[in-house]
Length: 315
Image (cartoon, rainbow, N blue to C red; front, side):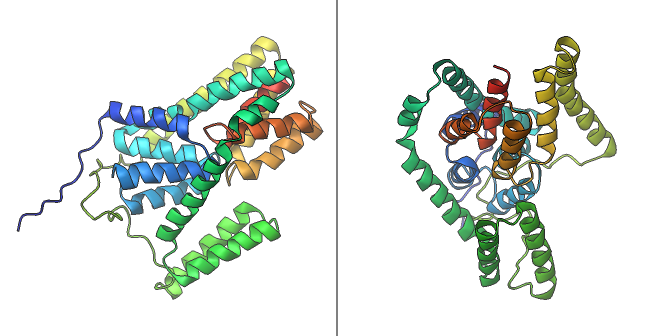
């Protein structure tokens, strides 16, 4: 009997670019909502990647500093179309929110009041909550495959919600438990089988090209390019406006913050608020809360609130 089920064709680069541009405008709901949208669109609807591959990438991004949703988008774009795909996905994911938050930051400083902004975005609250709940249900049902994993997830929630235990400690503890459980009781801690199967069928997702092998030379080249693009503007501002200028000091502080943002925006925002409000005095507590409100109700990663902080500090 002829198998009528065929693999979907791989997306063209421009098709992927249009998707990432659209995602940048509709990515409400913080990391949970954004990951849910990517899962629904990329895995369930377009079938550009397998379920196992998506979850593997998500787990990896959760362990890195920085906004995990943007990192996931960057990884997915890279796997689809190489370096240009990763750059396009990562850039377009935050570009709309950058322009929106820049305009709202200016309006906030000029008008001194964001009541109308809160009213404008108030209707999005219910939709954002629904997106987050949908994300928890959809991804949780795929990843939690045994009673032990459900218990571990519940204990993790209890630890972070009731005891305010560090997100990093919870992640590392869960990883050690999962590793030991996989060795001792593999039926309760089933390990993933790599990037093979999908929830929509083993041969019903796009066949991705093989990933380039990591080499010392390639790693050194990529690192050199990225570090140059990172530090050149910071050092340029320092040499132009002065090493004690607010702009250079912001560059140093946010560079440091970028290295300690393991756990996403919710883990780093208390640190940023403490330093910028209490230590540096760049903005008031009221202004910090206003920035959080704007970032929560606009598309893009919640960490984009740092753009508001930098704008207000240098106003």
